[in-house]
Length: 554
Image (cartoon, rainbow, N blue to C red; front, side):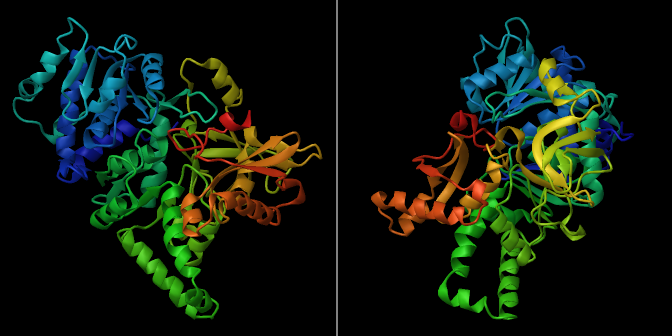
């Protein structure tokens, strides 16, 4: 158990950084300083008291990233209650189920989400509040919660008759072993589970990130990943607020044009992203230029290639604000060709590995410390240990097991799933396959559940073949599955490339066939594709944008 405590860190940060900007809504241009944020938290604590919220009670939260989403989250955990953030892309049935299953007593939501809430089903909810202005949108009959909230300023002035000072930023003791976050996974296997994360689990994230100086007093972050997901929440929000960082919030992952404009305006000191964003920039904008005749020839000339790459790096860094220390990718594997190119031009990109059950960080390595392309970074060995279930962990992939400070307490109201995930010795079975080198760098191979065992005894990791296929012309995304002991590729064409090349619909089958031939020349004989199926539409995905493999492999 760590000595440091998340709630104590926030109490000190909000006091010491009270004059600094904390949260800004990029589109509304509304900003809360740390002092103003602390005042709003104090008001919500009064509201929780009036509603009879006790320590450990659940409060649900759903909506787009905005300052009041963040304030509701922080107010909940600094009160001693448990926050239940819900991904806004969940379908209405899942949203109602999560509110019920979590036994949430209050609900904060974006105004447009009230239409999907069935108040007759979520009978445990006492009241619901808007993330636009905290107005009470719903209350159970006889509670008088709406009246209290309408007069919250009056109650606040009575409570703090002599004004609200830094000395009034005092939060209750919440032990490191206490659950403060109930996060429902997005379920690529067909169902979601409530991950119970403790104060200790979240404190671990801060104790890894803050010493790296990604975030520091007065630094800037542009948050565009959904905060209801563990990755964006931990790095862009939880760690930022512990350091005195100014967090500018975009309501959702924006168009490339808006994102570039926002990056140029905010000039963040660290950028956290999913692979899709940087892959689109490189594959759609940079690769076509480098592949043109004159440029292609120039890159064959020694020294000239270095000059060209240096200019590309300079322009790419400037496009993204010009002041970031590192561009961190997480949530999915980065395209190998894109990663190799970015490291060739010395673009400061790294890939981290984690999962919701670890709050989420498991491994990461700073670019300046010698990040190794193709790895998922170095194990956070100060906080956890790793075991690979393999006779040769450095060379033969096996399931990755993690034990340590950031491992969850378990799945809420699901002891069977908890016992399957965490064994008697405390090892979390991640379900991921990989290896680990002598320097604790982790290399991922794929998921245990997706591994295909061929009749010849070979282990095949579909994700590795898919990565190669997705890198070939005219392929947007793919799935490799097994049918009748044969490997079959389900291929979604990149219709933008297809149209640009003037490929007629009746030619598409032959074109993809040629791509499959090229793929088979790149893989081992036992990994070769026997046949393929062209998918007319993209695969169905989870809110985290992972493909729902179970829909296509069964």
